[in-house]
Length: 489
Image (cartoon, rainbow, N blue to C red; front, side, top):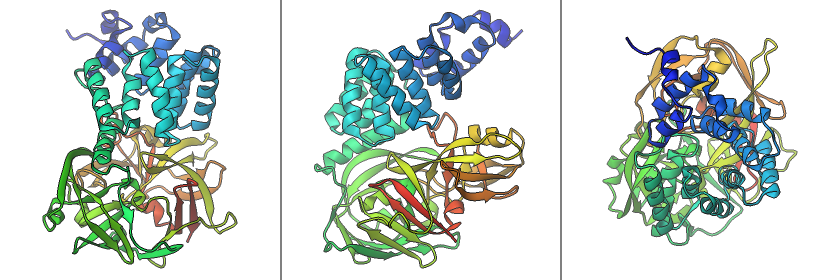
């Protein structure tokens, strides 16, 4: 006779979820926690361990609710609650709480982890993150969360290898894909190899004469996807323009066979479908219209990238302001953004792994409170896609199922993904309550129930793809001021 969860709970220790988690059995940790949650067994754990258990299982909303019930004057609890706020898309509250906890006790462990994580994920300040996280690992070297975030902050390949060895010692079975884990680890390893191949930390150097404005022809294929025509080492390519691609410049194997680039290192790319093995090569010269880049790092991937020869991430253009004029079909690189009084809605964004992430609200109507959303702006995706968690909070578990081609992205592409259509309408608002766009029942707005799961490590609530981008005539991205200006059609 199989054990029911109630009977099984009697055979479990309150420490069982963490033991499963530390040994890489994330699914079993979830099941053990759900069984224990139906009893009072977890209440015998201290506040800190209960909060940590919830965060490790990616149950951040429960962690926030629990953290707000306990005392806020304990620095360690304040640090854990700050991490829960950070995971829940509330960076302002997270930063304030982490700073307050650190000022109260500069040597406390979780405030150091919270400050380091916030510096890396929301401020893109790897130097500050490294300083806080190194102190944290010295305080408690047996806790893997600090090491995982430190791995994403380090730039030196030798230091990255030492951190990876320490993680292998702490978690020999691997670490689950959660708040702290795989995308950070794999992107950090790639960054370390980049710094070894390109010592100055620059992915390219501009050789064209510096001018205030440079305009490139931005074309669209029959699906509406944006691409640039480029010349690399004498060969011509069609490159998908991808704001979700960060600093990546990727070619497919078929395109790479037309070149003879110098091999640099093996690497792993993270995409909507998970990870994909590839390699880094060194290109000599890339021309985009009158713009010329030298020493371009070329990455390869096993995917076909939806028929394009490759993709070029928006951060390849450095600190230039990028204005996409969809009506004129141009990509203009500027020294300065448009003045504040310019037409359109100006919205701040965060840079997380070189991807623009907006804080939005979902207005569901019928007297229901607005939901905060963490949304990545991704011109490399065909549709706008919700995470399973947020989709269910918006529309419940009901909805018609359908299967479409996977949106474009780094890694494996064009796999068939099952989606559920949202059965109700909703509106997207800025943090200030300005209405950006409305979605009605039966529109393309859907949420993934396979890709955006704990098994992939993707944390964004909403991916704003070309379905969203096409609703505007001009989109202007300022990577320095971290603001996006959206001009409706």
